[in-house]
Length: 273
Image (cartoon, rainbow, N blue to C red; front, side, top):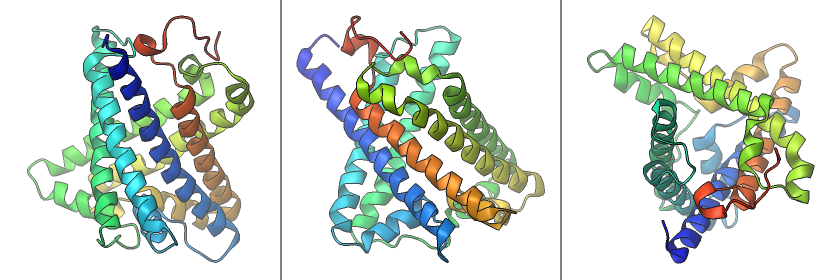
């Protein structure tokens, strides 16, 4: 990618994508925080976006988020195919690049549902979408094994995000500035909490595969409900909500300060330098 215009365009596409992710987790985390202190239910991504649709300017906000998620799709696919982040062509690098493409496609799928919601579609209720697609997968040949594989991939993603925060490996991807230095500790917390919640979702899918019972599967909303039902549930749910908001902060910081090796140039100092 030698053309400066194309490079600048990719930067802005990346920023729109991370900004959309930040908006979603701000919404989900904020509602979880509210549920921790009031008699309301914590909501997963789908229900949280449905709630947004009923607010003033909710529909334009959904359009912006949906378009942003499509931008994230473009960014991740281009990053994976063109290797603009220098992962390389060894086994580890190819795995990382493949993961970029897959996560981009997943977010593109979410973007389609968000646009559908903005156009007047129904937002779904009680956070049971994970159960719906789990049931569909289990009805297929070898469906239980497919669900188990999804659970393992999601567990791996949870571990990845948690260790990324705990070990601070994300620092090499963020440019050093007053902003990134100040929010660095918050990013650590956000990544660890997000990773732990992903692991909870993975375990519910794994249990559904083990028992051949799609009703055991749950998404983000179900994980938050489980936290609320535990001892000290309000505290746990509040901590999860705060962690998701901090994960949103991480995405917003990525939008503004992410280092792209083949685009940003070699002279930019990262948080790890």
